[in-house]
Image (tube, rainbow, N blue to C red; front, side):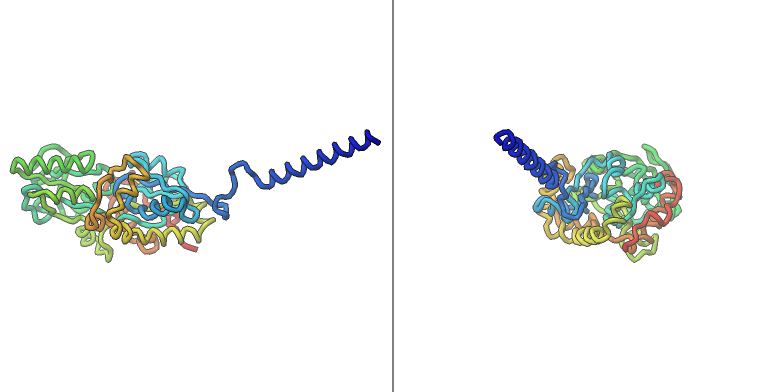
Amino acid sequence: MKKLSKILAATICIVTMLACAAVFTACDFSGSEDKNGDGASFEMVVPDGAPALAAVNLIDEIQKNGKFGSLEKVEIVQSSSIGTRALDADFAIVPANLAANLYNKGQDIRLLATVTQGNLYVLGANSNVGTLSDLVGKRVFSIGQGSVPDYIFQTLLKNAGIAYEQGDKAVDGKVVITYVADGSGVMSQLVQANKNGSEAIGVIAEPAASKGLAQSGITQLFDLQQLWKDYTGSDTLGYPQAVLIAKASVCESNPEFIDELLSKMEQNGDFIVENSSRVSEILVAAYPQTSLNTQLSATTLERCNCNLVRIASAKEDYIAMLNAINAINPAAIGGKMPADGLYYSAK
């Protein structure tokens, strides 16, 4: 009897251990539990600089609450790496031409919206230039060689019938474009010319443009957004400079969250202007090495034109911009105009 009792006790113990193991397995303490309750957990990557301004209210929301719906992270990366990082991201803000380029090279993505509608200005030191034709015979320093800002400026010159070339010295009968690495390169040329009492002209983006205009002797010659509007006849001021893309699989499986995300980002333009004193703080907390590490005024942020327009409304303007690039350098958009499959269609 004692032996039988021991056998029964051991059996009960084993059954109990197995039952407990089953309970722990069912509860899944491995760390792979569904964080959101709906099976979705997304990340977004955005390039440092003005495009990052288009996601400030999302970043602020995540810093405060740990997530926004199914979006748990907005990562700011060096602008030079966005093309690579966007390949693996659920969502990404990228230069407008890059979206077409990625799609034409086989990436299964969808273009959700334009998020930056242009932030380019032509500034001058000791210059009385009044029209684009007045640039003939002059040298213009410019940012963004081979990027959207470059193609926009070239298209405007072409449309005005102005010959241009790349170089380091002024040429009679042409506009000579001298490319520099970034806005600080343009500003150094303007500041030096201002000190010397000589003329210098440069294409520069916000927020660097506002810093330049704060200096005596440096003035705004052209608003390229307005010139582009005049050129295209669009009802929209500016042109698509940066866009929001997503994996096609994310769009197909999560249409309700896509709408929620776009609605949130539509509020960002007002958010950054109304919270201008906090914008830099939010970005520095997310990415300490950001180039936007100084306080930006509400006026400067307005001039950055970070207003989301859903692709259903922005498609015509986006195609006009791609056509302009395609006429100058088809390789910049992947060799051809993208098919309609690129454009997200809300369900």
